[in-house]
Structure formats: structure tokens, C-alpha cells
Image 1: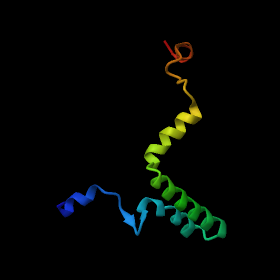
Image 2: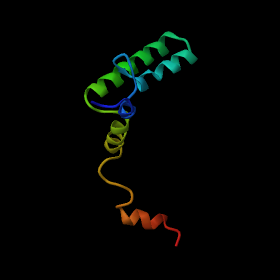
Image 3: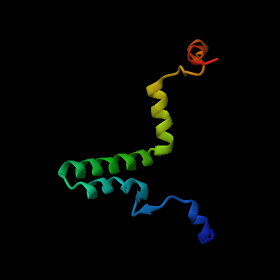
Image 4: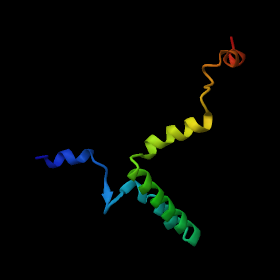
Length: 87
């Protein structure tokens, strides 16, 4: 039997959707237009699908950044590092 304080580590939910996925509705509340409503609903559905796949934005962001940057990192290239070094 879990005590109620153990539930504090769980993600907050609004019905079945992660509560953090509802933040795009704030964009719509600030700018009422059909396209912002569509964007907010699309992002809510996309975030719900990501959660269903077992990913979160904290996990997805480094994966996307690694895909954009590629395998080569700036720090490992010592010749370019030396060019920018001031001493």
C-alpha cells in the first residue's frame, strides 16, 4: 500500500493527458485565432503521442539535438579548438 505522499513523484495529469501538454493552450489564450487553436491542439496530440511512446520532452530534446548536430563534436576537433584559443 502506497502512502499518499509517494504520489508526489508522479506526473500531474488532467484526465488522461500529461498536465505539461496543456501549456500550448496558453498560447491560444493569449492570441485567439483559429491557427493558434489548431497549433495548440496539434501540439497537445503530439505530446500525448510522445508520452504514449515512452518519451518526454526532456528525453526528446537531446535526441533531436544530436540528430541536428551530428556525431562530430566541436570539442573533439582539436585543430579548430586551437584556432580559437587566445593563448
